[in-house]
Length: 556
Image (cartoon, rainbow, N blue to C red; front, top):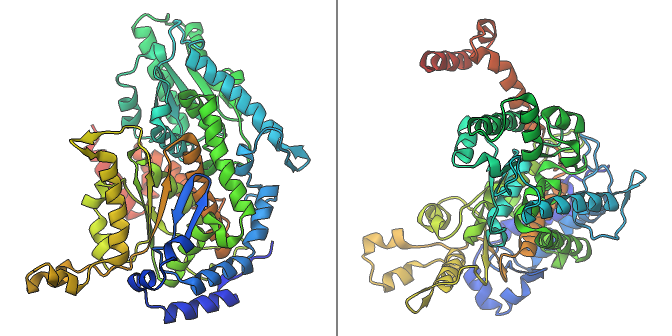
């Protein structure tokens, strides 16, 4: 694999010159070009994407597209879609896009057509989901399942919980889902505190069935279930009864069938996926089993269809019209030429309240790298800190920094034209009031308020400077018709592919995550020291040792 150093390209030199000569002035840009908004608006699937309030002109946009061409984004994209092993440090294909290919498609990788395998697993998931939704799958006492608890971490939690929250209006009226991820025992204790064990089903999501947090929580969940069933007399306190209860109340998302069986789960109730599915790209795999149960197979199929719509756009649209390519290039522009260090995602849709958290793993675990795919150091800044909260809550928290602070923070604003809960406050349509805030924020960020405009409002001179908004704060606006399963799939795929584009240009492997390993290894070494192993304690550095000694003194 040939990696292009972006800083050596002609386009990079052109962009450097353009940045030096560029003075951001969005007021003038819009005044001088009445067609700017139309020229810089794109559509992908159901999404209407307005890029016009970004700090670009036609020359910058052309140079960014040239950068994508020189860094062979097209070639790397094709390599990913055909199953080449582009995850070089783990020697794996990267085929999350195969998870949403329609039935009847074909993609042969290493001699195997993976699409029929994907649909075989999907049919198994759908059959299981139907059983739970129809009440055919019952607990050990014959009662139907009312609560499904997904136990996972990372991609096995962030994706499912985000999509579940996003699609709450589509959830079965007799089933609710909960999600346990944190190894802090408080997480499990709070999530099961008010549950009826007779009507609770656990899905343990761990590809290898060895993930420390997930398996620890799974064992605690099993103990809770069995102890509660015995305490209420629902089952006898025998090994046979306990084994039978586990088989009825636990299923797995895993390919390690031996470990699944050892835990007590019937391997027939394990839903597998493949090593070419990365954790943060897995919500549309068997990891989404909890979602199939919650929203049903038709809606889950629509969710997958949304992904596929954006996949086809990403593959087929020219770079100038390609929304994920353009979004990725804009992020490169801000990170490497403006020194931006963070990126805010601001959904004006309460159901997307976990979207920023989901994107944190997708983007920062993918592109938080200081080494290129060939092992050499990166030659420019990489990655951004993704963060955000739903509007209008964020307006009353951190928007001050975005509007008037000293840092440039590119923002993505996301809104839906229709709401699942239309309401009026007197004569005021509340959703329209909500969207007025969405529109006002991007307008204020772009155009600001001048000293003259502040003075014209009669503001005391000593307060004028405090009330000036410099503007020229970049934002992208994304609007969809409604938060449907297809639209949620489209949003996720949009960010998956924009993240990929950035990784290609930076020359990094966006699909490994070695940075998470060292802390996990050290935790296993430190654990004995916490548990009063004095020899292990003596091996620690003075800071760690002092913290452990404080813990020992305080623990009761």
